[in-house]
Amino acid sequence: MTAVDPSEDHTEAITMGLHDASPPELVDAMAKDVELEMGWGRLIFGQTFADAETLAETLRREVPGRRDICIYARESHVVVAGAPTELFIDPSHTYRLRFHPDDEDTAPSPVGLTVRTLTDAADADAMNRVFVRCGMVPAPVETIWDNHLHAEAVTYLVAVRDDDGAVVGTVTGVDHKLLFSDPEEGSSLWTLAVDPAAALPGVGEALTRALANHFRRAGRAYMDLSVAHDNAAAIGLYEKLGFVRVPVLAIKRKNAINEPLFTAPPETVEDLNPYARIIADEAMRRGIWVEVLDAEAGEIRLTHGGRSVITRESLSEFTSAVAMCRCDDKRLTRRLVSEAGITVPRARLATFDDGDYAFLQEVGEVVVKPTRGEQGKGITVGVPAEKGPDELAAAVTRARQHYPEVLIEERVQGDDLRLVVIDGRVVAAALRMPPEIIGTGEHTIRDLIAAESRRRSAATGGESRIPIDDLTEATVAEGGWTLDDVLPQGTRLRVRRTANLHQGGTIHDVTAVVNQELCRVAVAAAEAIGIPVTGIDLLVPDVTGAEYAFIEANERPGLANHEPQPTAAAFIDYLFPGQPGQPLAWTPEESRPDRD
Image 1: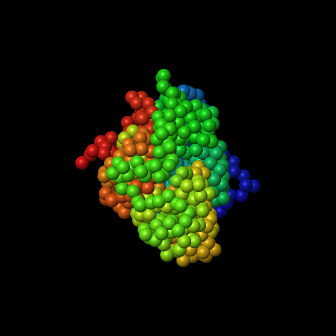
Image 2: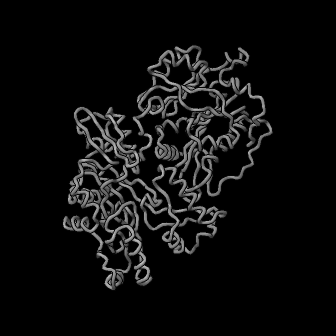
Image 3: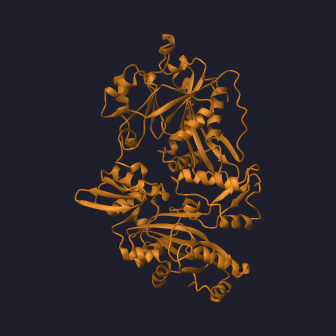
């Protein structure tokens, strides 16, 4: 892809979309008042509208829950001035990649990735999952699929991981020439999205290049895109690919989705971590006043009418000090839930003598953890008896660095299932998987871990990183590798044993398929502890089965980890019962413990 020389004269590009230099007969040949339904909203091509009043009225017809975008308006300021309480200029930049006849993109395709168009409606559904994970508005599957089949001007591309066929990215293109006989023969790129857990580098670049090649081969003159003014990473990518910024504005309607773009949030709300921010955003959406008390700690005060509640992420004043202490002490938590009839693994409090190793020999393999702590700190998963007493002693020492008392617990095989219980109901269920890397055949395992750690950190606001420490080195060694080995292309390698998000683990929603017996167990555990909002961790061989072992309870579960499940909505409902809000997407009857 050829970069544009900044020394060239780009006067023509500056007038893009306005057609001031186009012959009148070509402008007259354009279709009029063009709107393109994308499912998440309409693309409104402002240059096809004869007057500002008609364009403003078109923008007013936006459907609730959608996000219409108008671009290339002849006089954006005049359109907004005609409806200042309803419309605003989007704080985004427009970038253009101009094609030249002799251009040819010779960049190599990313390893382990294929970019293709849609093959069936399931691809459209997979696109939506990527949109949701990126915090974007999804589109009805039928709209995407109908556009794919019948709208010649619309091109959908997906990036598919070669090893498992998973859709990890998507982009949409619009051919202006085909859509409205654009005399400038332009095109545009929309909704570029990459799954934060893609575990592959270069997905966004590959999608952008593929779409540019599609329009270049179609004979288009350029491809435009709109990008948030503060999205430095995306802007850096586009400029690297040869895009040049041009002075074209986009217009949007003032709605709940766009609110952060046209109103300043309460002071320091933007500094909240994702776990507090999701709660603050849901509260503000409902008209609940949000006051940030400590952004670093995620502490906010929510006020509506005569009711005021202080929360620290998902921990609120309604969780008693007694319940917190019960959750904080893993020994006490185990005893309480065991007395309630819930299955727990065998365990002992470390005595730092031969009795610890005798227990290890008895059960075969253990997990060692401090009795108090969070975020997976100090935990060693999988100390087998055959390793001898030295490895057990090292694990105990590691745990004691975080708290003097250490729990040695029989290791139960299974997947780590987190169930979020709010006010006596399970509102989300997710498998938490240890971090993995995928070999490229070119990079060392150390470099792959560092790259995946950067991606996890960017996707979680700095909350999730993969440490490169003794545990990581030991886990890699179990797979038969060292950190400095080059991992073959397509080879998957688990690099940590723990599935904790803060240690680089990933979250996979299973709310729709989790066995109701597991939900009943989670609710019963929360009731035994006496805690209204909690994350119950079980080890399960199969989320659709009833077999489990209770591991622990978290008094401050990360609600942001379970999107698109409405955890924040359920939390606000609990804090402010009867307060009007958008109906929840889950059915309360589905998580009642007494359900058949």
